[in-house]
Length: 479
Image 1 (cartoon, rainbow, N blue to C red):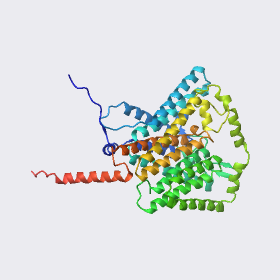
Image 2: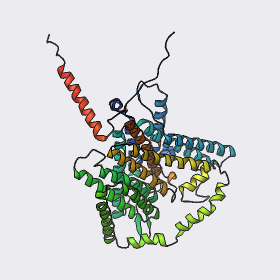
Image 3: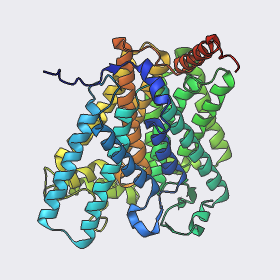
Image 4: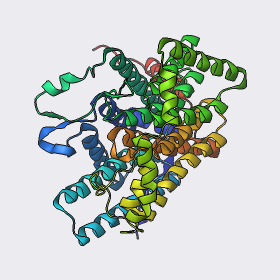
């Protein structure tokens, strides 16, 4: 009687690094392509023949979901030892609730335009699932986490630089997208408020853009403190990262938006404790110096900003009045909601992502989404507690701060309805889960090459040993 076939034996993170190095399209590269499409292609540009489903990052996210599903169905010969992931569990619950809400809405009957919104919104959730699950199950080493976080921070800094140019020129600088055949350019770009230009870079709306800047600020500060997440060796590297952090803060302050300023304050409060005490006073002084310089170079900015909090304009009245009407809309389907994406602006505009979730996915949807955010923050803080490496601890702290910042700003606008802010949030949530896996591998002693420096060192040692082995082999005699 033959023995039953045994499954693959998990290997440590050290051995897995050499394996993933041979694969040209690993999880980190898939995610970085997604971020390029998310940041570089304006959110209001889509493929004409596909309509609202034609945004490149959206299609790539669906492809990532297919990639994840196929890879999970394959029998692997080797794999990294798996760890439990609360983020994955919470997201699967969120996805199930979205599917139940979809079925319930279709059974109740919907207008024609809302049916298309239901289908599109469900596909958006699957696109987010592709990004999140590929990161959770595919990013297994600190090297890959650092690559993606570095890519995120640099991308946000480039967006801030583009926004600064837009502010000075008064132009979007992205008009060339309309001349490319096969693309449809919708509404988006720069706007104006209180006589000042509100820039959005490649985002659809300044609020969406401000959310990305504020959530990326802790990542840039972490890059400065780790000298490029372990890649830089000179002080000049840290100087560039501090300059990028200042740029994000300056552009966020120039946004003429209450939400952006609140998000900036939250991000600063969360990341300052991670700065070493010997550098904290210097960093705070530098931040105050940047604010003073902005006041001197942009007269009237302080008055405009303060008026946003002291005056009761239409936006403020809309937000406060919306909360009073929230129970009225939630009562239609309090548990699973009326269907994700079906609460159109013609009914009411809440400017509150959490309120929108309560209406479209019910209280169960809100609880599941909140559980996913809490699980992400808990995972990041677990990684910070379990790791002994300063780079890992600081990156984990920054990722947790980024998730909290985005979740807070979500209370001031419907962030999940905008492509860039939603995609950024799910990438960061996935990274929180990934860095927890890295820290658990370290704690259990299943691998030691988890720091950014250690990967390059191990690969250099591997190349040297192979060269030595080749040189020691006897050469065949000439015929």
